[in-house]
Image 1 (tube, rainbow, N blue to C red):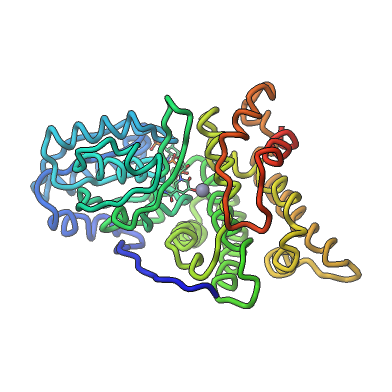
Image 2 (cartoon, rainbow, N blue to C red; image 1 turned 60 degrees about the vertical axis):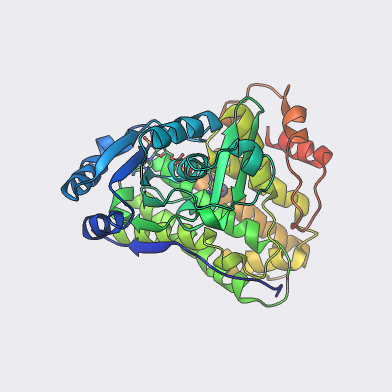
Length: 389
Ligand code: NZQ
Ligand code: ZN
């Protein structure tokens, strides 16, 4: 196992009724004025907005609303939130939504305090945060990114056509409230997309060195089996509390740094998806679903022992008379079959791409991850994109 330091500053309150039980007390710690941040309005339709506002009002808070945070939040939106926060002298941010809302809020928490251009300072390149960001608390409404328990924030700079994430421990939310019942109203397509994002985070971590026995890989296998089982259950019955809670907590477990301890981590598929997103604004989980099987067909021979474990321990494939290569490949094909079974897209065309004109430009703009089994080149990424088309 590689050396590591572990800390996670977010306090999680998980379970039925947790918002009613804890929000009032938690928001009391950070002052009177709250920037209430949310997305395109789902929380108004499913009743979460009314519940949250009523709790904040009863607690005597002044609410400043920051709404309309889009999927794949933009730097422009971050600046809008920072302006609101500064003009109204808010004491804390409360983000209510999924990864897009939470990521945008993290960037706002920096931009509202820093006097600098935060894109240049913290996203274009890794920076050093030598001040306290505005305190951020989150109420998570969809399982997927795990953003509630890390410092990661993925922001799209539309002008530069770059979608990129940085992880700053100072951006970890102070608290995260997670009521699985809040996820019941997530549309089926988004639930499946979020679940695939969870699976992707685990795979991108698992398929990297070290290969020798390590507890992070053992936890990852259990988490992958859990996502597969519980997603199947939640598709059958969207109000299956057990399935929804397991998906919700798995999404946090995949990205709260625990399974990354001692691992190199790959995340090349995320690099590719982020640039597809920067050019096409595609849904994060959909983009990942298209890319993963094709990417793994390109790299499984370099990471053969781990792909064999994946086939046997995650997909329960029996070796019988298969060679390592055949068994590893069978695991990748089981993943591809699962993607079809759960109804996710399998081609870039299905994501709305009409031709291959910009594929080279997109491929050339992708970061090359350092921790995977095979070092990618922009040429090979272009081949992968073409196979995905
Ligand atoms: O905007 P609203 O109206 O709220 O609707 C959202 C949105 O349309 C809807 N939704 C959320 N909760 C709902 C609900 N609809 C009904 N009922 C509910 N309870 O779901 C849609 C998707 O929401 P979004 O926040 O965009 O999804 P997700 O959580 O998948 O976040 C995606 C973003 O996070 C980034 C992605 O790249 C993308 O920008 N990521 C962030 C990471 C991180 N910070 O650690 C890691 C990830 O790999 C990822 O890159
Ligand atoms: Zn992701």
